[in-house]
Each structure stands twice: as structure tokens, then as C-alpha cells.
Image 1 (tube, rainbow, N blue to C red):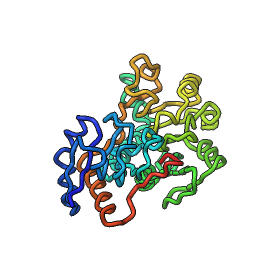
Image 2: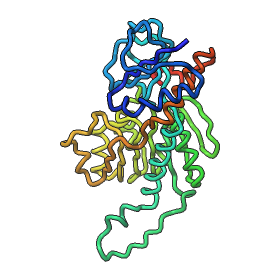
Image 3: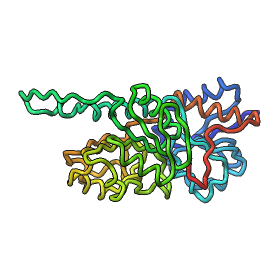
Image 4: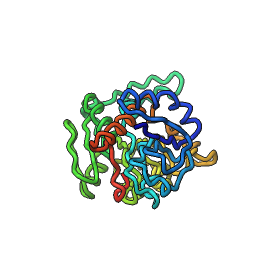
Length: 310
């Protein structure tokens, strides 16, 4: 039987996936047609991103699974009409891209590279940074992306503590959980990286109280979700010197408005949501594998717990 896979994302996404996705599904041994339009009752699988504009899944009564192109599913999981199984995107390209971005910016702040790049002309400053094993780094979030970043930082020998809402174990990382664990990570970390999902529990997790728990002059690196940070509290902490610098890749409103104070703040680095993006080639392989699993009656990969939002 030939299955129908509805590609429900933007036209730009379709241009990327038009050729590679059908090829990946065929390589997985599944007969399928990948289309951008179909009668809802004929659709077996939906490949989805919110950029396509679809919000009503109720007509798709025969759809076996909704396969997200995005790692973050906070804009999808809560849709009332979504009763089908939902799988988020976890693929090697996404993890590798995030790991490279996180590692690069941790090293940048660890080594004090900004002082050399933007230092005064003719100033001979030999400020020797500590070795990585003496730099205290905290990682908030130990899911797939957090774990990948943690493993790279461990290889560089950083003194790494990781926090998650539920207990996790990562070799080489001092892992903690719960409110007491979060406070412990914040109080000790000179550099904090946030890689948590956007949920009601993580909304403004880094608020004024928690920013005040960090060592004075600490650095925040956020490639996770814009909602993790209370923007007003962060700006105040930057202004009074409690936080030394913030490198931010994600924001509550994207693109970041041109008049947002982050743009001109001397202690803020803005990157335009480029820490990690889905690559069509590797993502298509993940989608194809989940379709193959569904057809074979095997458990789906990266299934979302809709009650938790990830």
C-alpha cells in the first residue's frame, strides 16, 4: 500500500525537502507519496512546522502520527485538535550544530576573547585565563541537545554541573535536579548555558531572584528558548554588573524588534536564532525512520508527552 505523507510547512521548507524527503522514505523501505495538499481522510502522516499555518488536526482522522520538523514543540503540543501522536525532531545535524555553537561561545567567554578582539589599540594585556578544568560552567537542561553539548564540554575538561527538572546522569557531569539543585548550579557557575524547553514551569526561570544567586560578573548563554529569561530582570542585572555578559540566540519575539534594548547594549551579544537549525538531509532520515517504525508496529522515536509539553 502506498501511504500519503502531507508536508504541512512553509513553501521555503518544501523547497528544501521536496527531493530529499521522498528519497529518504523510499530508502527506509516505505512506499509513499509526499504531497503538500490532500484530502484529510487520505493522509497517513503529517510532516509539520507551524510556519505552514495549519492549526486544526481534527479532520485528519486516519493520520497515524504528526512528525515535527522542529525540536521545540511548545507551539504544537497544546493545540486542542491534536489527538494524533506527536514526535519532535531530534537529529544528528541539529545536535551537532547546537554543540558547535555552545562550545564556541563557552570558549569565547572562558578565554576572554572579546577583550582581545575589541581591546584598545596598543594595549598589551596578558590576562591569562584559567584552564578549563578550573572554569565552573552550569548547563540548565540535559535533554538530547543539552546532553550533546555537555559531552563536548566534558571533553574540554570544564568543571561542569548540569541541572534538569527530573534526575539525569551524564558521564563527567555533576548532575542535580529540583529547586535546591538549580540554586546550587547558579551559585557556583561563572558561565551558565540554558537548553531547556519552553513550558509553564520554565517561564522566566532566570528571574531577578535567580540572577542574583549567580556569582557577580557571571555570563549567560541562551540558545534554548527566549521565554526562559525575564528580559527586564536581565537588563537590570547587566546594568548593575551582577551579570557580566549575555549571549542570546532566542527571544520572546522573533525576529528581535529593531528597537529592543538588547541590540545596543554593550554587554549583550545577539545572534539571530542560528545556534541550531534542522538540516533537511538528516531530518528527513529521522522522519523516514519514524514512518518505517509506524508501519512495522514499532515504538515511535522522540514521542512527545503532551502533558509536559516536550
